[in-house]
Amino acid sequence: MKKLKIFIPFLLFIMVVVAGCSLDSETAPAETTAAAVIETASVLTAAVSPTSTIVVDPEFTDRDQKTTYDDTSAVTVTLDGSDIQVTGDGATASNGVLTITKEGTYVVTGNLTDGQIVVAAADSDKIQIVLSGATINCSDNAPIYVKSADKVFVTLNENTVNTLTDSGTYVQTDENNVDGVIFSKEDLTINGEGTLNITTSDNHGIVSKDDLVISGGIYNITSADDAFSGKNSVKIKDGVITIDSSAGKGMTSKNADDNTKGYVYICGGTITIKNSTEGIEGTAIIVEDGTINITSSDDGLNGASASAAETDTGVKGGGAAMQNDSNVYVSISGGTIDVNAAGDGLDSNGNLYISGGTVTVSGPTNSGNGALDYNGSADVSGGTVVIAGSTGMAQSFSETSTQASLLYNLTSSCAAGTEVKLTDASGNKVVSYTPDKTYQSVVISTPDLVQGSTYTLTCGSQTVEIPLTGVVTSNGQTGMGGPGQGGQGQPGQGGQRP
Image 1 (cartoon, rainbow, N blue to C red):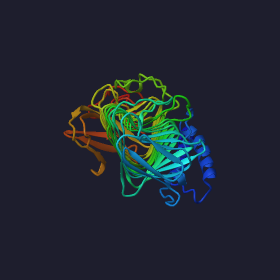
Image 2: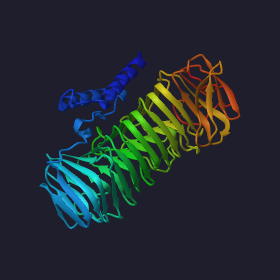
Image 3: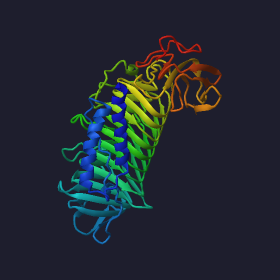
Image 4: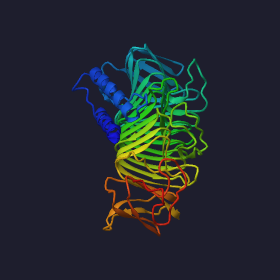
């Protein structure tokens, strides 16, 4: 009965998230739908992590997804070197700066060699900036800076390539610490079917001090620091996103001022984070769909609050060195996630839930990190998971899981490119995965695993028969990181879980 209390609300939460991702507010008033979803998501999120206060809004409004506009009423902005020409009311241009002060749609084309777009509108105004073959470089500030508005929508016009760059350290012009190529103090949505290229050698890529929503478009972000940063949330519905954030995070959302906010929600799109410190980080991380590939010098997915006493040393004790943060969780219910991490692969300073999708993890190779790392519980109830890494901080899933899993620490390391293969008693392949790095510990969970059955694990020249003695079968540690006690062909005594 205890498991039912945990997992039935969790599955209901996932159903709400799925519905939220596909909501079409043409079939119901947007305000009513949003309120209902927010209220329901709040209650069910609390059921997932009972003491978490994070409120997840899985809705994408019609306006978030609207890429059309009225040409006849739109203000036309033409960039020409250092000159800006404005046709229409609501914006002025001076000394290479376009200042938007009124609600409306602004279509921007051309090349600005050194200047920026500034939005300084009333807090009730909604602004749509349509980039239609626009290139903007700003030598000492953000190419697009939203100081004030209700909400700003940046639309990438179909079949256009738009490029935003800066040239170094920013000179602050007001009370705001502007530190991103696109920097917004307000809610920011980016959509469309065009391409946006962002390059910065000193700053973040896209920053919102409120909610950051991506509902479409093609993105190539090269940033010295975080590529996507939303203080309240980062929400991804669709798009093709490629990130190279050498000294920063691919996507991050944490809020030190409000513990109900600071989450990353992904329900679609193709995301490739090919270089980052932390791939995706948030107080809560919710993945419902999409294709995600992460390469990180530290953690792949990192559930951590803004107050987490955590450094980037890469040594976190596999969960033992930090207290469980009850406000933090990572939830994966769908999609395809592949992680290549030098630090922890899947890391939650609170709880971890996997109920669907396909998850593969390669790394870490050092004993100070774990391919699976959590401080609360890690419950698997669905999906296919193959995790390969070092033995030092290896963890299995928790006994509160409803889908069977196994953790096996091998007698010796397997070289990068050595296949992990699990077969059943008839020799049929249950699952296989080829890690990119050297590994010695393997965690596997699939819906095909049956308690009481015996499986054969083959990793290169090492072959071992493993009887599944319970929901969790392990020859190592189940709940806290630490070296395995077995590794001689059968699960070690004390590692088995009934």
